[in-house]
Length: 114
Length: 109
Image (cartoon, rainbow over the protein chains, first blue to last red):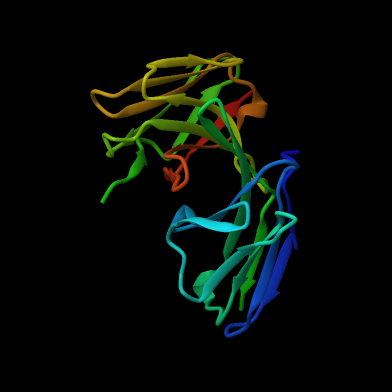
């Protein structure tokens, strides 16, 4: 158990809909990262938040957005869903120690868009 | 563009043998590399990392080797066990971490 929690575990929805994925980082971790893992694209970095502020952006679509709240939990919002958005969405949290930063991943949310 | 890639998509080894999983990267400025293990239905799990000022780092039954000259990274697992069966990813970078496609390791009893 990494200490990172994600809800829901599974999500089935229809095209055009909007969903929110939730992540709670490990206690004390200030950074939260979101990743998308699909069969044809592998693990893709989407976005990082650090202590409530956006820190880095990867291959995140404009239809997707995220935020990190004062209690450090984070939400990833996916809107106008398309079939191709079906994937595993992982959240990871990290803390920098001794110049290195190790990310610990949650169990993921499996999204299926029908 | 820059990429992180893997040499083989699958690797099958006999229980007790050593496993070597390889990874190539293209960004010569990369200075931090990580190996992750992902078991079926779970998120990636950190195994070991290495910074570019090192060429070898050892953990428990695992060793990571970094060859900056040819931009190659490898993960060696000693005395491979059935519980080592998983997909292994190399990744590079800090904030904007880039992952390789993964190698599926299968351990035969």
